[in-house]
Length: 445
Image (cartoon, rainbow, N blue to C red; front, side, top):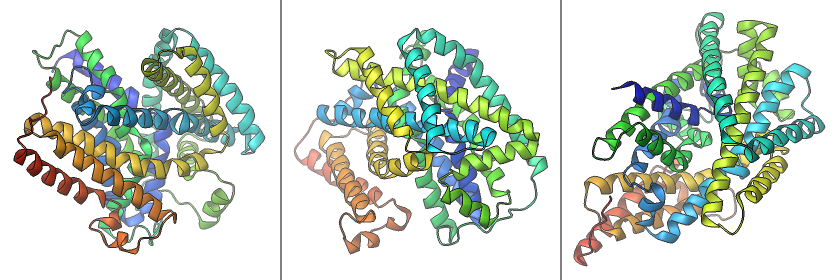
């Protein structure tokens, strides 16, 4: 393993390490109580394991996911990539960076959570994002190159200090009605990992990794696939350490029921409160200033990077609309949505992620399987079709849009993984049909 792989690995870590992701592990730790370990294990699978697999699968085709998803169906490839880009872009991920910055930077320091304060902050925030997105990306690269190590070092210092400052046994029973057993806690953690959006972001970001590895002189003949795996493992180890450690901190913090009620009544995110409180416990009054500034700046560079990448993608598929117009539109939409508040943005994203994640996971695993098993196209198509249908039905059913009682009786439904058997059955039936019809197997470059 050479130095270049470490460089690419930490670059991949920086791409996935959005400051907004910091708020989910502490909240999971607090809620899961005595079932912390199965819950965080489920979270790590979707928050780290699936993004790692996603990046690896993206290196199977030289032209990335647009080519490999196109082998399932060209229209499906475009629709899925557009949906993913909007989700990790102006609809959820970018607004979340502004709302997270506000709750971790402004609320603790100025003791305000008013809608007017959020409006003013987000206006300034997105004005800066707009300016950076319009100008040379080198500026963002330089800022990010400084901020990512500073943020990582600060979080590691916080983790070490909090370990000694908080310590002891878990001090909360957790939400027993949700985390009632190890199995249900694993399922809940698995779904909570969707909120990082990293598994679907891996599909969008995989070409960045492939290009970076190729720039180091690595070609397909000299092990592009292997080098991508090694870089992904490095990023996964770093992310795993941070997620598990932050979850442990949340699991060992003593937060009263009265405080939790007040936070919920005020619409303040639990994760941001836990993280800023841990910083204050560890570093005193200076802690909230330190983490507030670092997280705000880290979110700023993340938002700028997302605006740039999403705008470039849409300009590629709609070349008649200029890149700068997409920057303007996506910045404005992100600004409007961010003013709904962090909790609302996160809650709004969950139904979308519950539909997108099963489809994306199934697609990635089918591509990876197709590399080693000669698979007829209909096997991939039928599996994806069934997963898409059951995902929509499941989300509509759980949100009261429709009422299908037997949905709760489906295998793995209690863990919100009822789509998995449909993916397997669809693949098997499609595989048999393909063999009967002598359908030529999918071939990757």
